[in-house]
Amino acid sequence: MATVARSNQPDAAPAEGADRRERPLVKRHRLSTRIWHWINALTVFLMLMSGLMIFNAHPRLYWGQYGANFDQAWLEIGSTADAGFLRVGSLRVATTGVLGYRARADGSVNRRAFPGWATIPSDYSLSAGRRWHLAFAWVLALGLIAYWIASLINRHAWRDLLPRPAELAPRHLWQEIKDHARLRFPTGAAALNYNTLQKLSYFGVVFVLLPLLVLTGLAMSPGMDAAWSWLIDLSGGRQSARSIHFICAMGIAAFILVHLIMVVLAGPVNEIRSMITGRYRLPAEREPRP
Amino acid sequence: MITRRTLLAGSAASLLAGCDKLTDSDSFRGILRSAEGLTMRAQRLVSDRQALAREFGQADISPIFRSNGTSMPASEAYRLLAAGAFTDWRLAVDGLVRRPLSLSIDQIRRMPRQTQITRHDCVEGWSAIGKWTGVPLHLILDAAGLRQEARYIVFHCADTFGDRPYYESIDLIDAFHPQTILAWALNDRYLQIPNGAPLRLRVERQLGYKQAKYLMRIEARDSLAGLWDGKGGFWEDSNDYEWYAGI
Image (tube, rainbow over all chains, first blue to last red; front, side, top):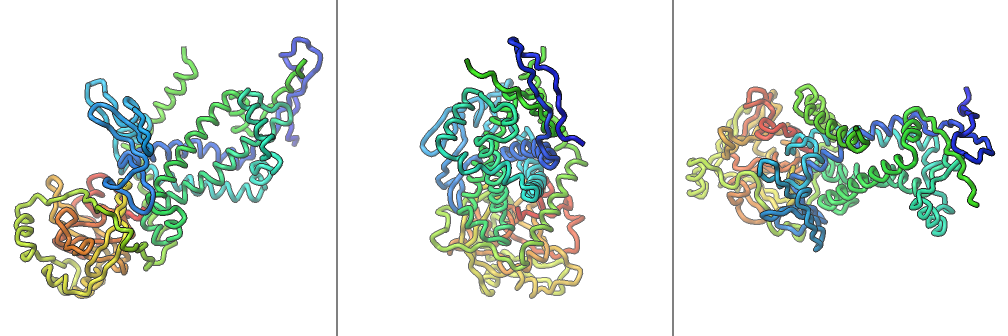
């Protein structure tokens, strides 16, 4: 069976009409990648939103082993009589209407840190948020481990995700950043490989953010801290673990945002098809500049 | 016209509404709940039965050990006990035991004591480190002589929420854990009322709501069924918190 289905139809676009361009449909994503992607597409949303519910129970973050209401928080979402705020260190930002304070249509006020549209469930329930979070944590962690094993065996991790030294050279990185900012995405066969920024972000998510989320999540568990006391030392204390967990979760949220924007900019139909069927139509070569 | 934006907002809203529906559905809640058993078995699988919670140094103690939940039980009976410095208070140890006990706070304070500086982790997310002194629970259970059928130790408390008293329960693995104590002192002072005077449970590998305060009675049982809603604790019954609070 051919893995590359060639379509030799002339491209509709070129007006000057000279060349027939090949835009073959090629195999791009492995089955393991596709399955994991779609499981995570759901799981990560559930984890983020149930996690925000859990955060709402005590919307303050600390560094170190302990931290409670009388201790110094480095991050806090709260409210005054008539306004919401986010405080990070000594920086205080008004967030009325979004974080910490929302006036409802009936005149009442919701003072929860994150609003109902961002949490699971939407009405405050720490216990229900925990049920969701601690159930889907299994899906996230086992999926991550399975994907690691698969991508170590099929060498996906080293071949496609790990940036090569030359790609990390400042000149190269800077060129890619400029291309990205101008939305000049790779075309033709070059589009099959991840560019360095993609590699860095995918590698960072798969091998840094997600494992850190799992480990700091475990480090918050008093049972696991007794079983594996290195979890406490690794994270610098349970409250540091909670802070790192939150920061990594925000990192994942930022990744998803950029990821979705890039999918839309790069051609959502082609990108989404490639993640469902595995097949991707190579973008046409760019016209050489006059 | 349906724009991409309204489509996205619409699907996000329906996803959220769907999650709320699932949260309220008993059968789906059952699926989510099954993770609790999985977590407990997995944690027990990877931990030694005797694995100890981290003990900290004097310098690590929280400046203020905040109180949570009840800070003063409402009953007249408790108020009178507190007014008498708990000299009339007795801890009942009964249920599936061969020798039911009734212990005064002085008797308990004269038993072999153990001091540990440990971290208290509230389910809400905060932690406080305190120095607890008390009697190992296994000494009391051994003195009472657990019967063969005993599987759970239930802690009945003096504080109430509405018409229900606070209670908690643990299994024998945690009951006989070397750090499980009945604490009568916090940070070198007799336990104060906001922290559970005169006696509270410390079960150091679980979350704060398991650390029952204002203990009145310890009961050995073969099952948690038949006790209030049968889920083994006040918060477990009333709000569907996990009975196994190791995470």
